[in-house]
Length: 314
Image (spheres, rainbow, N blue to C red):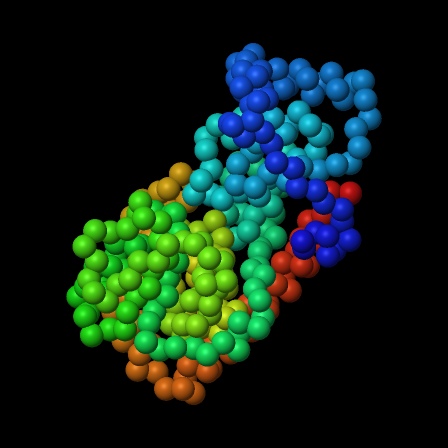
């Protein structure tokens, strides 16, 4: 949508899935092509025989091998925590790597000189900013990620039974067992409108992510006008700033592929939640207004950076 808003023509192509008739034959071909390094010779032959059009394929999170045969120019938009080592051999076919965070840029610059920062933003329904914000529950979205601190949050809420209920949007397969009575699990994406209302209706959002390719949940909450509690570690503290959220201290606990992981400290979560509950209306308004300013800044920066990144390709 943003590329189209900048005047560029875009198409979304869905490649064959496992249930489609052509999938098996295609899979056999690409397995064989990888084994004999066919892509390298194919590219050389095509470049000699044809002048290819300036069409760019954008690869999100993963480099999709079959697409490398389709066009000459390829851009990779990675998530460092899901980057597979098998992608390294395809990086020589890329025209550019666009990074959604400065952390990602610093990681991929080690392997690819032209990696550049574009940022990102979240598109929200602005009418949800005016939704009444309730104080009787905290909201968090875990979804299908094992890196969003679900167990830590459940354990902290168990220690503090007097706190408002924590409503956690989480896949059934990832739910910590025996939650306390002040934790409620919500099915992810059961109903989009209901999900938006639940998120925008809470004054308090808490996201104890260990790593982020990019933080849509965090940014959306800032856009909704929520008071957001966030892990104080990169890139979460890059997306936010010290004036727009309440921060929770964290410690390094290892790697998830190319990304460092940071686990929120229990006592710091408790301090942040207690602070949020004790804040006056004026104090809350100051932080949420700063959050809105940060939300708008991310959008503005992304538009500028994305346009510059496209211009560099010409």
